[in-house]
Length: 485
Image (cartoon, rainbow, N blue to C red):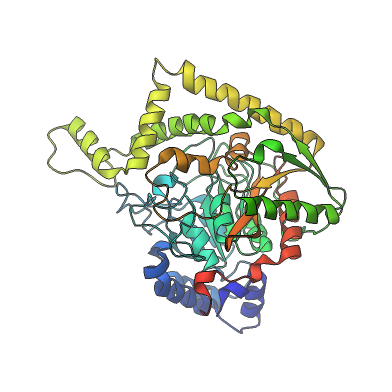
């Protein structure tokens, strides 16, 4: 079956009509993953028990829209009895004894966990090149990165291995790979989805979201996994809409703000061209588009990397070689165990961020760096919320360029960090944001970023759906996969 041409709704109809079984869908997904692994490297662990779980669903009968649908999970989302590594050496053999809330909710809805996708180590990266389990490649061009840190999930969806996959987004880690792979990806409002069971990078920024070829598929998945969780005190008690049922293409009267700061110097001209075409399309649909200013945006990257690295240095203290994961050998004492286990177990990018964060939190630097970054973050939140008092949505490019070459930026941390310049703002402000395909630049996909008001994911979905149905980018097949089933 060619999953690239299917949706969750079309697969559900086939399951209900017994044109296919859930067990067959699971086996088909595993076969595709295994066939692609040497070429794409999208998965770290394939769930060999998925067909058995799917068979049980067949026996019990297909129920809701996700019943029997295979879904992939980024490998920083813990899964009971299935290895969860965060793409790191230090957790190379970690076997959780419980599952994340998002996984439990989706399995309760009948979804089948097909396996764990590759990512940048501990979600720290923008290219999936920092993974201990080697780089995932882009299905549009096998010499290019899929983006990151949710690169495995994005490439798996683009390649038609699964119809939907979960990712996490700390500074753009869903939207950037969605743009690079020509698919839809959404980061919901901070607190909309539980973070319980998600291996933490930066706790005030991390959020679980969805990647899929079609907007409506992400809407279906998000509705099932969102909502309050007693395990997560930051999760919201606001009711969760049925995003799929409420989808609309009507953009008449919608007010769109385009920050002039999003037109970043050095942005690829074809990225700008495609984004402008998308904005023109919205105008023809009846929306108004105005330029606005977010003056604090120029500080976004610096603020993000101080705050995110500081939180990371705190969160990663738990990996000490004592309780689980990698443990160094030939150690002399407990201090030696800590130092050697972390030195040998963490990759270069993770060490870099731990050192940056530890410095920012130190007594001599706290006021000058961490405290100042937190204050500027507040200014930035206020600026974005002020814009959203007058406008329904904020839009601009998802990235400044299409996917770059593997190895092009991995040795230049500052160049890699600048990949997040357009996506970081939504994380700092905790706002819902998505990337929807807008066209091609140099034959590679580019995305339009859509940012909404707090807990107004519906407006983000609707705007993305309107553009999707205008350009029908989902009909395009990744260049490197043309001719394959």
